[in-house]
Image 1 (cartoon, one colour):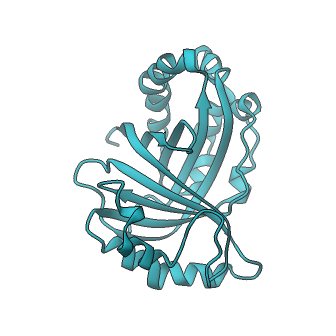
Image 2 (spheres, rainbow, N blue to C red):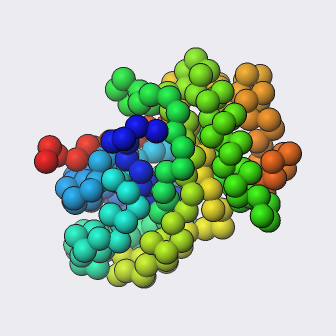
Length: 235
């Protein structure tokens, strides 16, 4: 984890009404993401499209820390949505919205942008948080980030307090933080990696609905391909 690495993360999962899909992408590209990454403390915004059983879209914003997502400038935008935002939110479904703090990070950012991401959402078994974090920091993340084709591997933990803040936008889409407390996030050059023997060895069996010796529960795996990204303007 580098000194200047973004330590906050906002992730929004959701589906869009099929007949509004193009207009949704237009809104998100041309207004919403521009607005968001202009907020002080935002580093970059990305949108991904789901693969297989994953939600249709994943929207993702890296911030200086999770408290940026409780700041006055951000909450002002959340509580004063534009007419276009209100229209777009009316076409969103199955929203899950969670805010995280970075626990550990290995590897390097992709030279341009990572073409794919793989997520593992999970809870730790009772009283196992420290054990799980230690395993990710000392074993799993270093090993998996060393695999060819893996750019970065990171572990996040939900910021319950910030995730629970009620805003006008949240009232409109109804999306809460979901059940899983932890998020493992992998930036990949190709999608073959999570099915490889080397990946399985480093993961020790992290699979949907599986339990492994360190005690992961409620495990969900998802993969996405990059659709759009936008960096914050120079400050």
